[in-house]
Length: 254
Image 1 (spheres, rainbow, N blue to C red):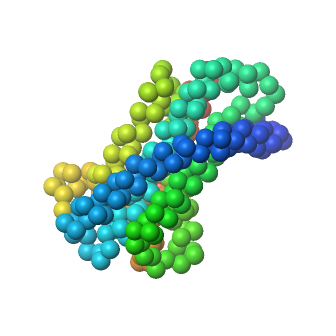
Image 2: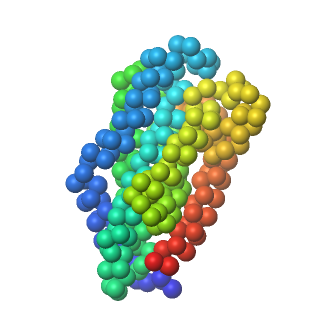
């Protein structure tokens, strides 16, 4: 089995290094990923924020978790595009002809997604601090926030892998991210769900973005997270498992 291959981690480190080099040679992709979430953050805080009642003194404190999710949703589109490019250029065929663990090619892209999206999220947080973000969270709470965001990134990245491998065009490879980004709007990311019509509220409270946003928000404000963190982790782990299975099935057919 591949998992017992003693060269698996060595192969994966090589594939990871290859993908990371591509990222750092084109840092503009990270900046591009961050521009839209930053623009939305500025718009909602300085234009709409005064008219939105969230029960918090500072709207940026309420808004930040949803913006971080949007940033990750934007970033994974590049994973799908890079995988599509590798497929179209015959890179996979070249790697498959070598004595390496096949799945490490995908894992290189997946792990790189964690790095690039992590940099984008840190950039968003720095901008939020300049806009007046104040958090009472300690080190453990911040580590928990980044842990949740990391698992969320893994979940979305494996969906991106499916899109990149199955797409027929470059535009199709990245277009899947739009519905994912849209989920943040129909959640508690921008306004409390109890302000929504009943049908919209029911959807908002029973989709992945809301418990993830609520768990992160409570951690950043040093409040009890309740069941939100477990629901958020359950959603992310379920998505990872299902997306990984489908991604590997598609990959083996290439």
